[in-house]
Structures are given as structure tokens and as C-alpha cells.
Amino acid sequence: MNKKALTEADIRTKFITPALVGPHGDRWNVMTQIREEACFTKGRVIVRGKTVKRGEAKKADYLLFYKPNLPLAVIEAKDNNHSVGDGMQQALEYAEILDVPFAYSSNGDAFLEHDRTATTGPVTREIPLDQFPTPQELWSRYCR
Image (cartoon, rainbow, N blue to C red; front, side, top):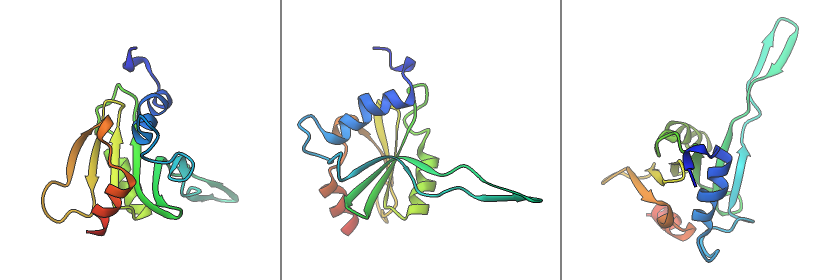
């Protein structure tokens, strides 16, 4: 399969979601811990004379929750024509708006992680698809 020919949606479906869920479905729970294309703003209100319209809403490709209403991470996906870290700036912007501790970017080859809680050591690292942290791992890192 030629990853370069796949769309962003294909990359999410075929590579990112399976990496999150794990080979045995025992990592992130799709029903309770993963929200795809999660809108978190309605868009800026733009007024021009007598016309009013909304700007584009902000939408995270993935929002990961430890428990309901307790988001831990945001993931920005890109198609495979981009590098692993090309979505990081957008992921960091969304992580700051949502006040979540971890931001990730992926193109289906790996994940680039940015730990917003890190005070010492590396803040950014690349993670293979099959080694994405579990909810418990991220929660314990956040609690430290």
C-alpha cells in the first residue's frame, strides 16, 4: 500500500486509530476515551456592516480523555505527504486553548509528542505507532 496516496482520513482510520486502540483493543477505549474531529469552538463572529457570519470552527482531529470531561491529549493528523511533526504547531495551539497537557502530531508513520508539563528533560520526542502511551501512562505522567 502506498501511504503517500492516502488521504488524511485514511491515515487516521488505517494507522492512527488502530495505534491508539492497540492490537487487542486494550489501550484507549474508542467509545469513552477517543473523540474524532472534536469541535471545541464555534468560530469567530464576524460583523461587516449589517451582515454577521461565523468564522471557521476549531476542530481537533483527536481529543483523548482519561475519564469523561477530563481531556489529556490532542492529536493532529496529517496525510503521509507531510512529515511526522507538521501538525505540531496546530496541536500545540489546540492544547493551549483546551488546557491539555499533551500534544501529538502524526502522519501515520509515528507520533511526535510534546509534553507541556515537562520542566526537565526532553519536551519533544518521536514515538513509534505501536508505543503510543496508554491513558494510565499519560495520567501518571501528568500527576507527577
